[in-house]
Image 1 (tube, rainbow, N blue to C red):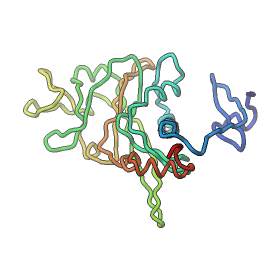
Image 2: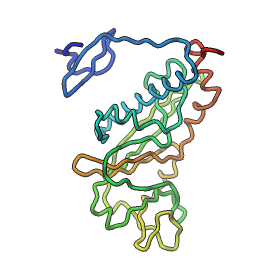
Image 3: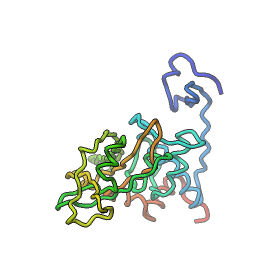
Image 4: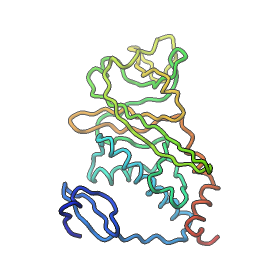
Amino acid sequence: MARATGLLENVEGHVGGLTVYKRDGKSYVRQTQIHQPRRLSRKQLLLRERQSHNNALWRALRATGRVYFDGDKAPYYRFMSVNTCSPVPYLEKGHHYGSTLLLPEMVVSDGPLAPISYQLGEVDGQAALLTDLTRARAGRMTLLLYVLRQQVYVFQNGTEMFQLSIKVEPLTAEDFVRVPSTLTSPYKDVHGTLALVGDRYGDPMLGFGLVRVEKGVASHQRVVTRCTYYERYTTEEALLAAAKSYGGLTGE
């Protein structure tokens, strides 16, 4: 390991046979060492596919500049340790370079603040993100809405490329509507609860995470989504295709 200087100070990632990374605000460089056996067991394949895809998700989230992962680990390692509940997509060799899928239950923030509860639903026939917030609570909070969009590109030969883009929108209490008392809401109480209403909350290629942030720390929040595009990459056929692209599975 050595300190990176000159042009390499502004680079992060793989450059030729070198890996440039940051630690404590300083850039370091080391030789890239990739030891991936071509043939893996099912368990090894699952672990590698999860880690590879979560690495891609981390890069997409980090690009927003709004990363809130607290604890005794650096934000990257905390992100990797808490994102183990989503389905594991199996991608063939070559897809790992920039391919990202919108997954349900992805953790977008992790901190000590009390979490917000929310789910997708409807208000007066309109798609909505129903929450357990009241007007009084929302007025006291700094709220960020993480909007995740699954993008799919289909080429002339029928192959697909897919990417996940993430943007962050600051919210105020005025962005919410009060759920009418005549409607059933899983969060309705004597004060009424709030919802975000609009066509995008019914979009099958979008996901949402509502995050509370105060003094640099956040609540623990996961993505809710109607997107099922990822499912085609979680099947037995996808697993076998991914394994085949790396030389097959051991013992089969």
